[in-house]
Length: 438
Ligand code: NAD
Image 1 (cartoon, rainbow, N blue to C red):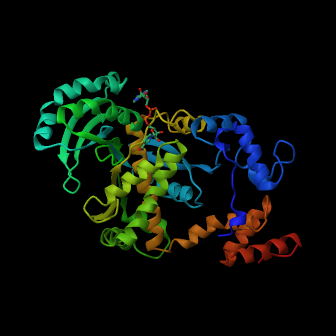
Image 2 (tube, rainbow, N blue to C red):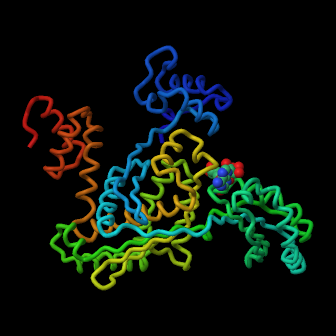
Image 3 (spheres, rainbow, N blue to C red):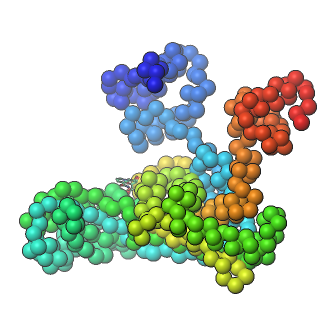
């Protein structure tokens, strides 16, 4: 690493006003204050909208603007008989196209059937120095704990949520005692609420048990809060859409075998599940949900048997391929940044302002669609042909193409099946010289 190129910010940068932080950063990076001179094109990408810059400074420390991740819409989902379009925020070129492609196919086969469990999250208190008598006393005090936890639950009981149950266990390796408080968080993701619950009730549990708190925090595992989606695709449909020369039965067999492969081989399962999360994470980001929590929970769920396996299941049933996906989905429709930021509010409006359980059902359908599109491509023509078609415009852009040039260069690269940067530069030079591209 070349130390002379590494950016060094002055002490106290984070305490400056947002506008001052931006000007100073521009000066450090480009040698001139943005306030005085022309703002560099790359820098403009972090904020042209003053109100969003201000909002960013309310949301994160030391903010310098916002990251303009592309936002698109995946079309044509039919979920439990209702038509849906999904806002998705992602940097990967083929993700939205793949989701829409799969959605259209599955809609013609009757669409997705979905369901969700109640939005129950787990608030955890970890205690040291609790003997067996202490564990017994905590268990015997559940009624008191339930009563004393009420003030920390805010409006949840009035909304139909609130405390559900308690579980106490000793962890075998550390000897720590874990107290789980299960709380129905309704339409919230629930992290802040549950952290307040754990911290608020901890002194009482310490005094009952005689133990000492190590930490209080929610569990992001969200195993109680799952979304599920299923679909059925007839062999005839598979044969018609693929154009690969495989019969529908063979495509179904190959997709089913691909799931068996992911179940057998964790190195393949990681990529398989990454494809599922392409859709779910993009929806989480578009709605300003906690993507890290949703992703961590999904991968932990995939490993719940002790081995990391496929999140989806694809099985042949008669002359159909049956797909299923079930996983923890702690989407919030209120609270945190969801429905707070205007971009999140817009995304939720596109979705019809769903509740958290509806969002979980939608996310499960989206994840299953994304997985179907990836597997169909992988076991028939291969994934790269379609992927590079969507990647080509960005190579053209990187080579310097702008406006209508981008599509011309991308089409020529696709026709030539050459997606190298140098080829894009040659094509661009030819285009600008008025020469034929192919
Ligand atoms: P929050 O603190 O904003 O609480 C939700 C609020 O929404 C509550 O005040 C509740 O009364 C209100 N509300 C209104 N209508 C509701 C309804 N129908 N159902 C439920 N509540 C309703 O948000 P939160 O969901 O507790 O926490 C989410 C945030 O916490 C996210 O931004 C996340 O990034 C952050 N966070 C995450 C972690 C983590 O480990 N994942 C840790 C800390 C914080």
